[in-house]
Length: 164
Image (cartoon, rainbow, N blue to C red; front, side):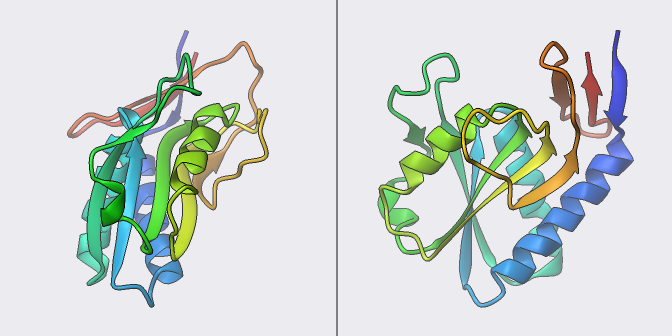
């Protein structure tokens, strides 16, 4: 059974709000790196980048972050070399923050390079953290049981999130 928790319109509103929050936070920066965790985190980062292009003159660089979710201790890879985000502002983005495992290993990777400012963003925060990591920007906070799963589907004209 699926329960829709975010409709396409709600996701669009939350994406726009997060883009404004990022712009306000990084207003004094010339460039911001949006580092989206592969697959859905990167898709969400692309949506945020599109909104930022409409509301600001910030240079936005997209970066895809690959983390092995079954073995997060394995090396993290990025689609751009670390020299391209060194000493710059960066937002690590994922679709759902559940236990925090993926996000904390992403944070760990980016802490190995000096950054001017570092924030995190998620569409859904489930409040089941195993690690001391938080989302600086979030679309919705939702307390769920550990047996429930949240899926986010990003489609061109019908994105939605559901609880199963």
